[in-house]
Length: 395
Image 1: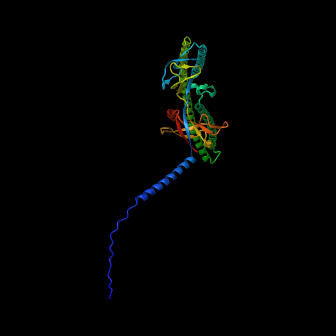
Image 2 (image 1 turned 90 degrees about the horizontal axis):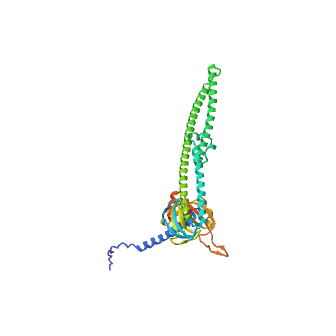
Image 3 (image 1 turned 90 degrees about the vertical axis):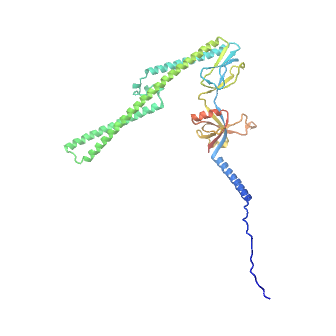
């Protein structure tokens, strides 16, 4: 029996491509994202720790406190919160229980004394102004200048003029010696007493020309400096006139204040006046409230009031805290600014009563007072008075 082999054919159905497992990719991405986040956090935290010092700070705008000089009741208020205040402006009226001549007389005597001092200063300035002559003053020695006109710029200019004049004297002496040698050489050449003097003669001619240029340039520079000095003196005189006008206004204001005090002395009414220009910050006593002598009535902010940030650092940061070092400030609304360390206090505490053990503080901090680096920053900081900020320093 014969076996026959037959060809076999394997028929297969077309297979579909396997579906991508999305869940594996998502879990991988989440895993690597989480890992990357941890690494990034560690890097940022480590970088901040080793590169920067960070602390919490408190903005403080300096206030001018006005205290009552008498006992009495607030009978009238002439101002409201935020009002602009001018010097010697009446702020609050107090009705005293009885006449208090001692306090009133002290204030009147103090005002009279102040007026006398201002009048003396005015007389001195007016005499100085009468004695000054712009055209002649710039040529006088420095010791003859009125002290009020002597500024660093004037001293510098006067010194430069003296140095340039000394240099000019030396150049003229060199020029004189060169001219003498030139004349002698010309005479010898005419008499033919020296041979081969041509090169030396040309050298002297060149030196004469150069010295002449230097002398003329120096004389021009000295004239310019003298004109500049005269301008400085002129500017000083204008400034002096301005000071005289300001003094006159102050004296007039003080005399008006003196008259008001005299009128108050005759009654049981006492007005409280502002000693400075600025803005009203807060009123501590309202109408009909009693005020004791020496008690604070209100607070003002002067026009150029000082502002600072008190920042408290760990004691380990003392090495990195240096007077004048700049700091980055972050305010509550996201605005940033720059300041500089003005003062450093050791053994400070951000709390009123630090935790103690056997009367010895458990914790202590380093306080750094930070001030604005310029007028723009000072203006920016003012609206954040009594607010907390973040302070950062480079190590």
